[in-house]
Image (tube, rainbow, N blue to C red):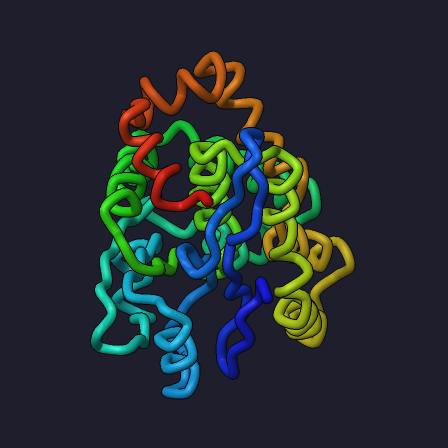
Length: 252
């Protein structure tokens, strides 16, 4: 079962079982991706611990972590590795007056570009890959909604492992399916506040993942950095040694 069902958590899922171009597949119970952990019940925390999670990598900003601290079993190792200095999607949502379909879509494209080009983000990706190479138990990686920052980290991680593009895209887009209840509730919340149809479309853009966001990241890597291999080596500092270490640990 890919999705981990919790009482007070959404978009928790294992990334095991994805096929690589070399005929291997990602191991189960090694990497879980998710949204925030700040509302988890004691039951939820025990579910994750029993699942095998012993490490948490929190991609949120220092401010987000301070405002909404994670809840988890005390035996779990926690580390905060912020991708960016702010949650740009949430910031856009709060500014309702500027929201429309076109500006929200363009904003998301800019967010995905920034997550590829920003120096802090690149250094964070390198640190995360090194942490994963050293971790022996199951690691949970999360941000706020588990869709953009977590989405990019998982995309890069799966590409490092050589997972086929179809499975990577499927995993990325799965956020919309497993987060559908939260997305619908959020849309209804803004609708009840009197949001126009145009603003509701904008909220949808900010609350979901999209093939075009994924393609934006791909395009930046190709056009600005001359492809994935160059990006890994020159921008993220991921050499063949680190790659092989990750493959040995996370593929079977």
